[in-house]
Each structure stands twice: as structure tokens, then as C-alpha cells.
Image 1: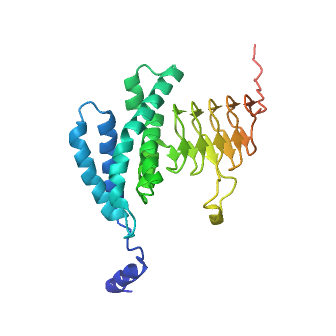
Image 2: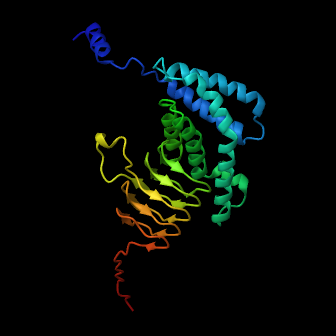
Length: 264
């Protein structure tokens, strides 16, 4: 096969007409500027709102492939929601500060906590997901996933004062519902019992009620699984059924320690 034949074969198999990776790059640029506009003291809000609108219009041109899709109306609705989103994120930061004895200042939360960053990008992406804006919300949360190790689908529903401690390895599925004042640790999975395409429109992921703590590497699966309020889920627990309120669930491993005899 000569060079020209190889090129023709590559062109023949290059099937996706709308697969423009500039959308990914532009989404990441939009996400960065949006985050800075909300939190950085040196980033002017008034000026950047106009810049963000320009960047958003680029995303509309690249992401809205269906002519009947009302993407051009999304920005005004989204902009109106930003104060409410910022208010929720400030509550998230305050929850981290009040819960984590290692946190030294609120500034540290905003700048150094990967869990907060992942929650921030989720909340910003979720609102676009609710409005039906295609692909961009998922690209936003995948950008945060790449930076933090936290994978939150933008379709999830998360209440106030959410805290992810240490962050790395957390997975929260599309139909998960998390109520207020929930705290989870690294490696926690809120997932589906099994994966099948015909479950696309069904609730596949668990519901976590208010004031629940889920410790490291716990796995909670299933759309009908509800973790009752004020419960504590211990590390490494595997849960596929509902847990009543005010419960403590723990995995009890068997640990054996063998000490070599001391030679005298």
C-alpha cells in the first residue's frame, strides 16, 4: 500500500463529521476563565462576563449541531444562575474548612483542595447539563477529572455543603442524588449495579441522604439504594441495598500480625 492509498484509507475511516477537538480546547479555556472570574480577586468580573460570552458563543458554534436546538438562549439563563452557583460553592468551601482539621484558611480551600475544585467545576457544568447544552458539560467535568482524579458526571444532583476529602479516585454516576451536608473520602464510588444501554433513562446510581459520611474506598451501587440520613459508611464497605437512617455500616477485615521471635 503506497502513501496515497494509506491517506485514502485513513480518510475513509475518519467517519465523525463533528469531531472537532477545538471544542475540547475551547471548553477548557472557558472553564479556566469562568473559575477565575468567580474566585480570583485580580480577575475583573464585569470585563470577563463579556469575554465569557464570546467564548461561550464559540462553544455554541462547535457543539450545537442541531438547528432546532436553542443553544443561543442558554448563555443568558446560565449567567443568571451563576450567583446561585457561587453561593453554593462558598458553602462547600465553608463546609470543608469546618470539617477538616488540616485546613488552615479558607483561601487554602479555594486554591489547594482538589475536592473543592472538582465540586466547583461539577456545579458549573451541571447547570449547563440541566439546560440541555450538548457535550460541553461532560468536557468540563472530564477536565476536572483529569486534574483531580475525581469523576463526577454532570447529570448528578448534589445538595448544599458537600465535602470531598483527599478527593482522588472518587466516582459519582450520572443519576446519583446527594443531599445536604454529605462528606465523602477518597476512592468512594457511587455507581450502578451493572451497565446496559437500555438503562439509559433509568435511575442507576444511589441516593445519599443528608448528613451522611462515607469513608475511603466504600462502594455503593444501585438506583434503588438509599443511604439514610445521619449514617456513617465505613471504609471498604460494599453496599447494594438501602441503609436505614442513623446507621453505622462497616467492613470488618481479619488482620493477623506475626512477629518474629527476638533472639536474646
